[in-house]
Length: 256
Image 1 (tube, helix red, strand yellow):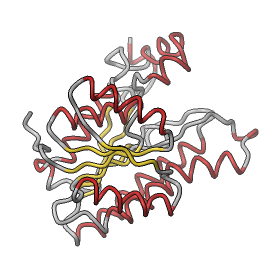
Image 2: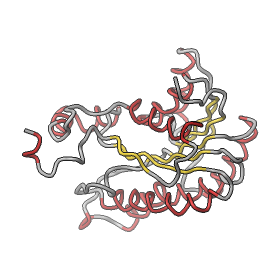
Image 3: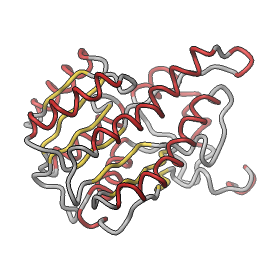
Image 4: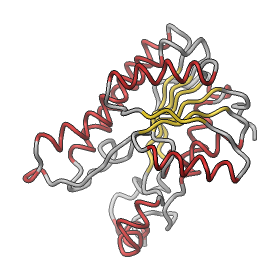
């Protein structure tokens, strides 16, 4: 692998399922030391066992991305467990479906707290431990930044906010020699996509993608790894779209 992340100390939020699991595994395969975090200890334990069967060891700290107390404690523990921090991957996210007319303030606040406030809290704490050459990479989305999706107004707002945050954070972090960038996934084949949304949804989505298939978590993971690598040292404040070309057609007729 051309991208140098070997022996790097990496924290991945939401790192035990879906895209986060793909990110964590790719970094482990490339020789990084990985700590994952999330709210669900059962999911993390299961994932850690899966990785052990593949010959990889990693650590877990339970934390809610939207909790200031949890986040402060997380970075203290991560710094102790890993012996420092080189790379922080902010992947934790939440995307329930609520149409605006039926959306409660609690629905709105829950999504914004996890997806946007969580990014702020984690970035603020990461700054205390990352040194010159440190990397922050955030999982954003094409939803809210490139396209809309009925039922996901709160999610769209949160991811639009994430992209705006990245730009200003890049200016502030540059004084410390730290870069911050994002990846905007399109439709990615995760357990949630497969088990919850089902084959009909997947088939319909594939029809809208020029490459005619959903992406895999590894497609996001390798893009994240590039942005986290030494080779990406001159990139900051940017996002990369990884969507199989889904956002390119002007109309469905262009896919014929």
